[in-house]
Image (cartoon, rainbow, N blue to C red; front, side, top):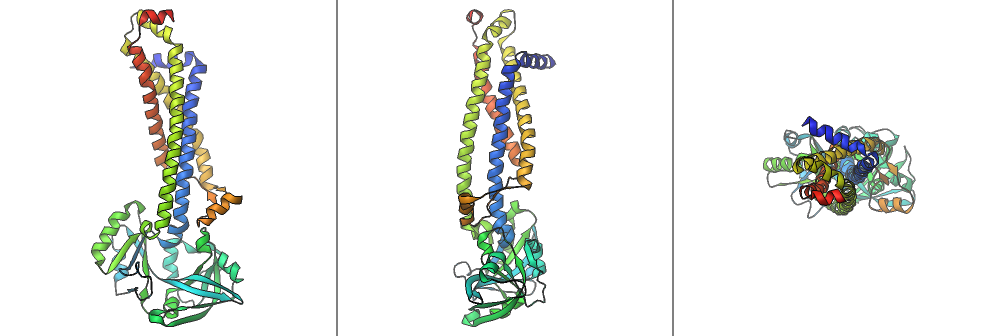
Amino acid sequence: MNYYLTMAWRNIWRNKRRSLITISSILFAIFFSILMRGFQLGSYKNMVNNVVQAYTGYIQVFDRKFQSDKVIENTIVLEDGIVQSIEKTPNVHLAVPRLESFALASSGSQTKGVLVLGTNPEMEEQLTHLSKRLVQGTFLNSSDSSAMVSERLAKFLKLGVGDTLVIISQGFQGVSAAGKYPVKGILRFPSPDLDNKMVYLTLEQAQRFFSADNRVTSISLGVNNSNKLAGTIMDLKKKLGSLYDVRSWDTILVELKQQIESDSAGGMIMLGLLYLIIGFGVFGTVQMMTAERRREFGVVVAVGMQKDRLGFILALEMLIMGLIGIIGGILLSIPVVWLGHIHPITLSGQMAQSVISYGMEPIMPMAWEVGYFINQTLVALLIIIAAVIMPVWNVSRLRVTKALRS
């Protein structure tokens, strides 16, 4: 085997220009495919982070009637031990009860529809790390009778820390709901949709405001592994029974899921076209290399080398050049991907407005995951193996006399 490797290595560098062209084509193929896939996966992760990790959580528990009729009457009555029972489910480490409903908020002459969310501040912090979004003021605590509002909403209502927010809505069983709350903090959300409407109260204050004592609209769950949601939901349904509806984020945020799937399909088509171009490039380079060495192949077969051994050496040459190109492409892409991960590209102009209109932050981050590096490497190896089949086949059918005259 060492003999064949030595022969293949020497053959590669006998014509450095030809070999460097082949290696470069593979290197840039890997480089661009990794960058493209990194941007795709990064944008999907950004979509999920904007909404799922910042607001809904990966799994939520509802009353079984709530999704068909989202009124406060169809809410969960917090029975003794239900939160603790949910938290004991495998893969669940946190259960946060929430009471949320729409209301009309005003300050001075400004009025706007908002989403009022009552929660336990300490538990909410563990689930969504809400304090990291605080840009002014201080964070709520469980005994507060104040509110936190999102930044765009605060600007629209011309609110600052210490100002009074007036909220009007309809509470449990049609009771009128009205309240005044001093603004304790202002939060900035990456999703423009959330940033335009969020008002946070403590769970106790929200229950009092909506006259919904001991009731919550949902229980949001923190999970240890987001890749095991299906099994976790099955366990919760068995434990909670038919009175409750357990849903993952993709069945709650159907539009977001469909948007990701649609974009992913388009992205895979673009990636497929890139692979097609790459494949033709590598195949053409290999064919050129084979044609240039036709006389050489005729000579070595004429002096006694078996065709299958010559084909094996040719395959080794391509695999070695392919591995050099793949490793070089990965090494070249790693710093670019890492830089794009920690410093996402900020969009501007019409492109930024288009992204904002979908409720997303106008940035282009890159995903930092080992998986797609491996996937692009495997695809490149398949392309290299497919490209080397034809030259090896041609060598096996080589006519020595015709090759020596070429």
